[in-house]
Amino acid sequence: MSWLSMTWAQARLNQTVLLRQRGLAFSVLVLPLFLAFVYSSGPAAGGAVAGVPAGVFAAVGAMAVVFPFSYMTIATGVVVRREERVYKRLRGTALPTSAIFAGDVVHATLVGAVQAAIILVYAIAAVGVPAPANVPLMLVAFVLGAAVFAALAIGTAGLIPNYEVAQLVALPVLFLSLLGTGMLFPLSVLPDWGQRVAEALPLTPIVTMLRVAFLGRDVAQEGAPAIGFLESFQVSAPGIGIALLWIGVGFWSTRKYFRWDPRRA
Image: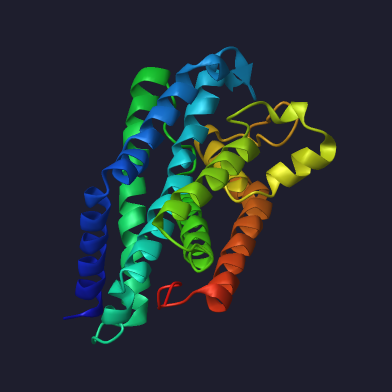
């Protein structure tokens, strides 16, 4: 088998494991769509933000809600396979370590991509979101979002003792991610230092890049002035840097804490 075939086989295995855990499957597959629809049509959708209808502004950012759930998918799957000694058996086969991790990431990314596409179709059809002004930046934002939360999921899985705790750990990640993007309440109610911390959380730069890519505006500036194609990448550079930093944190944590054997062994 080729490396791609082995990676795809791992991704299919992940989907099988996910569907067998009905509670987790519901949380991962349905809850992101529910949160996105509520956020883009609830109280946050009234009025105008950054020179555009608030519903449009909210719906664009809501597409990023899939990434914290990707974290939940990967982290829980890694813990389950480690504790059931699946990883230990896989390491005794010809399957490369890179294919094992790639299968985890590919599965979660494909699930997130389908969910983001559903949210986007809803946002365009029901909320009136325009076509993205900068498609390459939109793709960069999605790839970075998937990479950030995949790296953090694998990096923190070694600290999680069992399946039940894995789901509990995912909740603070989801809460902090949504808090940083202003989906739970406006960031303006936080003190200045709180706003700076929120802007440095993993999901916040991804949401900002998506809004810049779709709206063609510098949403971080007063009045959100319109910007061109290259300017979109320029204003997104700090966010890209923050995302790469979080990926680095995930890799560091993986090297330090990841283990193949069950923690109870």
